Image 1 (tube, one colour):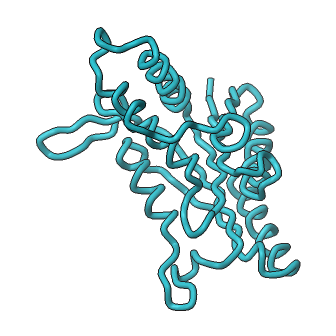
Image 2 (cartoon, rainbow, N blue to C red; image 1 turned 30 degrees about the vertical axis):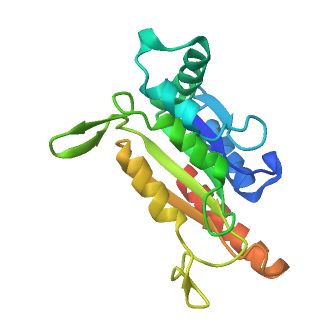
Length: 207
């Protein structure tokens, strides 16, 4: 049975445009694959992932037999996030842009699933990801326009695409497709056109 993991990273819960687009795609996917299992993980609003600190990182690198009860709880939480991702065949990420970057809660999620020996390992030839064989769809919603040339008034600001691609590749996930909805804060016409374009992409992908 196919399993789809939907990750929403909007602080606006299900009201963010990135979440709405992700929801539309998941609904279309489920219509075509009615037996698919759908797992939803809201990393920013409903169940914010704690930001990494010294204590949490220390739990990851402490040997299991030496962990305290608190450290075991931290690792168990990380294991839950990792197992959701391991079991997924398809991953759908609703990705808003905040101040030119990814939401800090999504970065915290990434910090909890990047664990040496679990989701990647170091070799003589460098790091090797262990989460292969997955397809990821990223629905990126932005107030401005960045993907076209990566420059806004002469300042490079499009950091999301490369960062997310590089991080997922680090874990062994190489099939990543971005669907953009840009210019959402540039007036009603721009917003309508951007959402219509993204929805057309959803229809194409669902088919």
